[in-house]
Length: 167
Ligand code: MG
Image 1 (tube, rainbow, N blue to C red):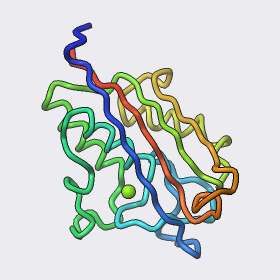
Image 2 (cartoon, rainbow, N blue to C red; image 1 turned 30 degrees about the vertical axis):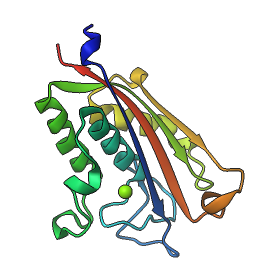
Image 3 (cartoon, rainbow, N blue to C red; image 1 turned 120 degrees about the vertical axis):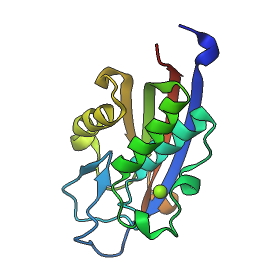
């Protein structure tokens, strides 16, 4: 492995819960619609995990940030499937000869409980990143009731990703 071509990227995102469940904006994490009566407010589909993952890819390739590439003022991205945004960001990585090696995600949410969804979320993220599920890790934590997450006002997500040269 050529260590000169190893890059690390970090991504972070937060979305606020809607006061009421929005039928047209079901809770989506890792590209999966979760059977929860909650919605995240967003210009796109509000997939806070995939937004953090996109930013980690962009961080690793020196590609700026997600807001720069997909502005929330652009009607093209209204309600956009974040999986599509991730695919576009991965093309940018490919153009620089880089692809994900492994990814580590921490979802910070007081609600909903993510443990029942974690295996499916991991499989879906692995699929989107064309990675073996063994190289995709998703952790979930609460804030023990503290702060805006603890007040159940939204969900935050951190992502760290290693990228390397395609061989
Ligand atoms: Mg976002």
